[in-house]
Image (cartoon, rainbow, N blue to C red; front, side, top):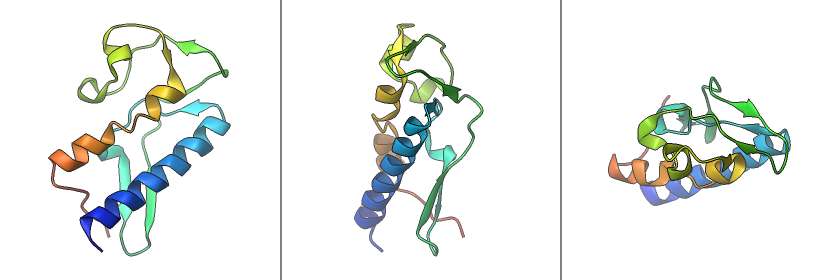
Length: 107
């Protein structure tokens, strides 16, 4: 499977994962490559480490600054209140994966 196909599959899985979490009113708040596990042989992607996750009410803006500084959204770095689902859906992981040469399958 080519990197391009893997990356597209990863993005699709992450979008479904975020949609599921947000339907449950849960936001992850620590999205980074280390928290995404891709099982290449099974074709499964799992989001791990919900230690900074939080429940939210739709429309509620969160204030807590948490997660990994290097992957934080500008709103969080500036200390502004933020719309948690909108920040999560930016898929900050994309640039990190490209810069680090792609996702290595874990078997």
